[in-house]
Length: 217
Image (cartoon, rainbow, N blue to C red; front, side, top):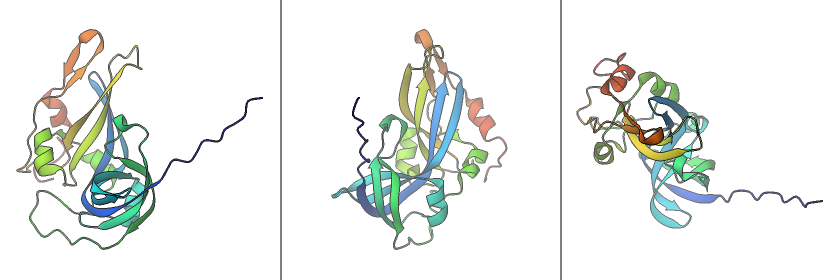
């Protein structure tokens, strides 16, 4: 009879730091002209110490932890986390966070947005608001610390008849007010398909997704 070897528990890495950004953790699945979203929680970008190394890093937390602590930019937090099992499906470095503690709270936002630095809303709010594509450069320079920005891991099913054939990338989106002066759409997204085909996502997809909102919503 084969011996059963109990799997070892994932190593937990201690971390601590100050929140420099908190945004929704949303995964996008594309299959040619079809897309769907998975709303997983939130990602916190921190400046601090992870595993004994001083640097910037990103952790993922669940919606329950966010609801309990209501963290925002400037908060000092600490905890432990495991390395993500599939980096293609995450923008965070650590997830399965435990022993999450919030220390000194950051101050209320005093400068006029954008960017917005308050406590991010619950995930259904993001789902209801809908998003527009956001230029990657604009995200990096102006929106990476805004609660309405989102860097999504994207899983693309290249061939519907061979679903194991997949590709991965990241895309940037904006859930913020339509009148935001920082917004820039950037180039249209092109999705690969079977036998060398491709599909370019038209502008009306974004327009339809946010058509229920007014300019300042």
